[in-house]
Length: 134
Image (cartoon, helix red, strand yellow):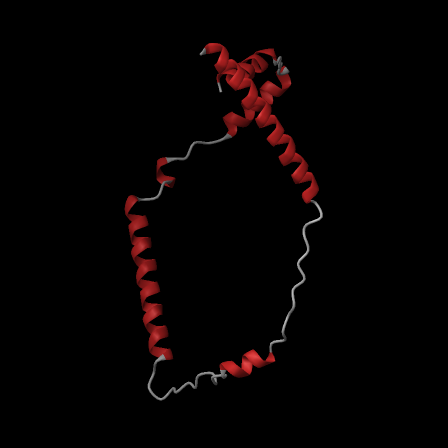
């Protein structure tokens, strides 16, 4: 990570950027034209709590009203007719699946073989170095 940070610092030092006076004036004018929010425009701290309570009570009242309307006496709602499981299973056609190996596995197999040979070569080099040390 230190190499990457150092490379980024070097790249940043090589960047040479000049801003024309016209562009600088336009940027300053744009920044100065933005007004800071005045204190009277800011919302009162209690306003958020009142809004929270009002929305919560409205939601609770609507939920209770919906429950009362749907569960009023005399409103018998018939449920859907139950369908026997055997009937549903009988209508499904039997499906035979043909499974074929993927056509693009040869590239993966070649990559695996090359990685395996690289590992074996690295293992051999490490063994030689360890034999030299011990």
